[in-house]
Length: 252
Image (tube, helix red, strand yellow):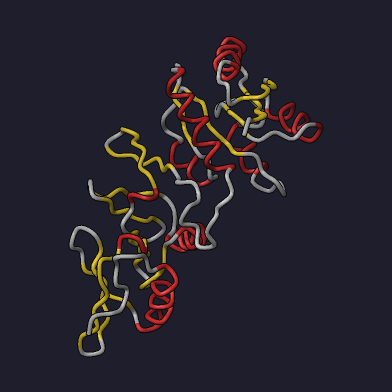
């Protein structure tokens, strides 16, 4: 599957370099260019593209503004941000960008971004999303932006208007409400078990029922309570997603 892409940057040298590197990738069929958001929108109305490689800080319509507009398209192109600034990574997550590439752009890093675009364009083969493309999530810690994969997240915990994502390597706070993650990740194998917790079904090791109280143990040994209102949904989800070698029957 080759891709038609649009590169958008208001700085001509950066745009030329990005266009050159994209053109060297055999997975790219064609590269169009624009130096501002308004021109990019006009081009996409005339000629649909599969992905947009987009600078963030541009005069007029910023890259984030453009990404929000694209999100309302009936067939929205995949968005990759290419920027010299690392302080918009969380905003990129909120507009569902599949990658966040920092300048100066390295060819190998750009090839990884193209791979993620292809995965995002590939339709899921399972209704519950088990084989759909993984998602890269930027997280910030002490002024440093790291990237984690959705498949590595064991569970998410509500913290006001934020959510804390728990992985094998620790936890990471993102500026996204748990309800938003539930809507976005529900088809990808996550289930709400409590008003405070959203759990990846694939990381559940066992379900226990003791004295009418239901809990789940996730990878790493963490035990989380399941509220009464979410118990049936959890059990139904486990039955649908049971895999060979794993017993999803609650232990009494």
